[in-house]
Length: 272
Ligand SMILES: C[S@@+](CC[C@H](N)C(=O)[O-])C[C@H]1O[C@@H](n2cnc3c(N)ncnc32)[C@H](O)[C@@H]1O
Image 1: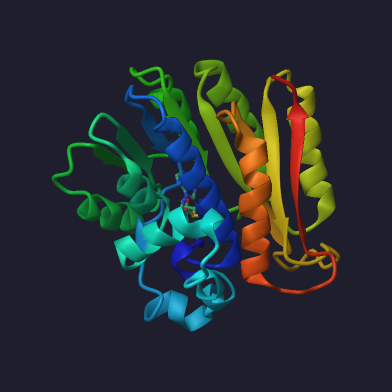
Image 2: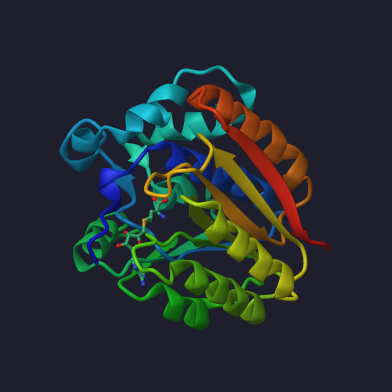
């Protein structure tokens, strides 16, 4: 396990993932009944961008550094939460900031040090459980939630060559165990072929109601670079596709790369 998210925190891919996540969480909160969030690859929760690994790579300057202070209403909720947390919020801190008292979160993080940091962050918090545990095992263990309402965020580091295939399997397993759950899996766009493979696999899986949302910062011609990213979302809440066209356009405008092939997609992979 070489990947440490701290080097990449707040980069454009984090911003896309987290802006979509905040929209999904707010949509879940439209109903009074409590829900559970399972964050399968949680990281350390929040990140100091001004020192340590994030400062060293400076990736965040091309992400949250460009978005902060923009007055776009489509990003106001996400950017407001970033400001509220103070440090750059990873998925656990963002989720925690949105949870109501009837909701809860389960975080899994396999890296022992990172899991320790996350555990300390939420020590004494009765709404958050942190497990040093394998994500794929956790999908089997924690689903379905007792509440029968929930959001699963699958956000692996894509270190392993077969990570796209694992995500596909993870989504299918999560759907088998929790058919009505909202499932969101993040993926990088390096080359088009991997993405096409994931989309085709989801189309062929028999899983109903699947949408992919993507932001490209440039045409994916050089597979050694992170050219964009996306999320596959199963059972998206009402209004997702329409809202995403607005949120993704705002992200793209804010990130403002101006490179050839920059754009966004909202693609329905299977019908309801
Ligand atoms: C992309 S980062 C997660 C970022 C986090 N979701 C966020 O948005 O702030 C991926 C994390 O997954 C962890 N990880 C890698 N393999 C794992 C596994 N099999 N099970 C659980 N965690 C894993 C890594 O240590 C890393 O912290």
